[in-house]
Length: 208
Picture 1 (cartoon, rainbow, N blue to C red):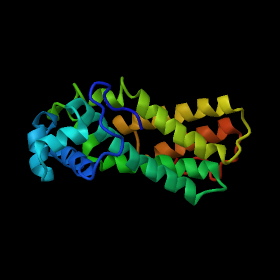
Picture 2: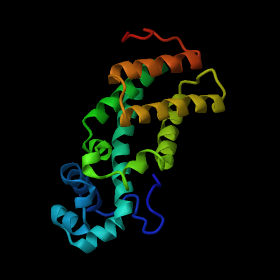
Picture 3: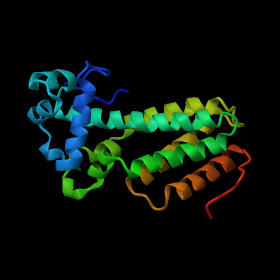
Picture 4: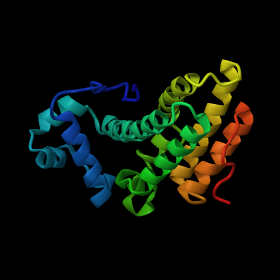
């Protein structure tokens, strides 16, 4: 995923210390707020030198993007698992994927930190999921497009792309500000996708 800062880009994979440093940053952000995250503190938590943190991550802006990318990988893994469980039922795959993402979001410490005003994270972290979420959306839509294509939906590729864009943006909106339970939200989005794709949805709106 390419959403690292242009000024001091960190390697996509990095060395053996990259993931522990990112994990420490997420934990520290959730516990003490983004303002408490410093390269020196991360070095202490990860058990490495401060220079190693700079070498693996780059800048604090790049760290913020790496943290979001790290969590996006977790969300995309549950999406993939949902589609793997339903290779012959696109609507059910969409339902389970959306529900799994929203349930994972409920317990995600980084997301809770980002949306919580008490952590003071908005200046650098919140835009990564809102106004500057282009790269995140691009990767999520690309993964979903590849999965959906395997079902050979009865629409042109561009039309399928519109449906995917709608679903991904709706899910991100509900991740940031839920308006119902994950099950009900997933049910509604799966129903909409089924109607647009011309696919039979059984059952239809199971959570009424």
